[in-house]
Image (cartoon, rainbow, N blue to C red; front, side, top):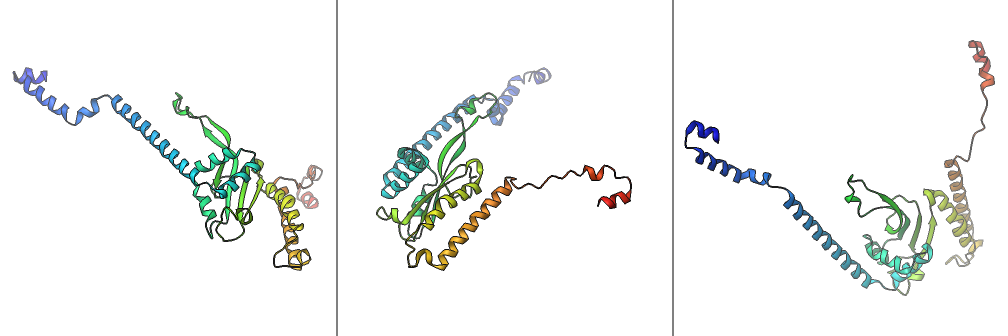
Length: 273
C-alpha cells in the first residue's frame, strides 16, 4: 500500500480499503486463531459423550426391566460356573451389545446355541489419550461377553447353552429345554479343552444314561453302542491330533556323521546310499 501511495500520491486510503475488503472475504477465517474452534469441538465432544452415556444407561434399565425367570436361570448357571456373583453377570449381560441374541435364543425355533466367552480382553486406560506421546497402555482384564463364536479368538473359558427342541423357552420350561455346559481353553488350547469336556463329562454322562427316549433297550441297543463307540473314537482322534501339534511324537535322531565323514568320491556316495 505504501508503494502505491508513493507512486500515485493520495491513493493510500483507496488501496487500504481494497486490502480491508479482501481480508474481510475468504482469508479472514484462516487468519483467526483456532482456539475457539477447538474449544467448541471439545464442548460438542463432551456433550456427545454425555448423550451416549445417557442412552446407554436408558438401554440398560430397559433391559433390566425385561429380565425374568429365563434370564435368571442363565445368570445363575453362569455365576456358578465362572465364579462370579449373579449381580456381576447381570450387569455384564444387560450392557452387552449382543443382548438381542438372548431373546433370539428364547424365541420359538430360535437360535440353537447361546455362547459366552470369559477370557482376557485388552482394556485401554481412560487417560491414554492424555499422554504427551499419544501412546496407549493396554492391560489384559477378564471379561464375560456374549459371542457368536466366529468373530473373536477363543483363549479362555466357553460357557454355552443348547436348546433341546424348537419350543418357545419360558420361565417354567427353561430348566428342561436348555442344557448348560462349559469347557476350558487355557492358553488357546482348544483341542485339549474339547477333549477333556468330552472324555471326562459327556461320555461318562452318556454311558450312565438310563432313559434313551423311544429306544427302550437303552445301552443294549446296537445303534446306541455304535454311537458311543464313535464318540470314543473321536476323542481318541482329538488326543492324537493334540499330541502331534504339541510335538509329542518325535522321530529318532540318527547320527549320520559316521556315514559321511569319509566321503571322497562318487563311489563312496553310492556305498553310503
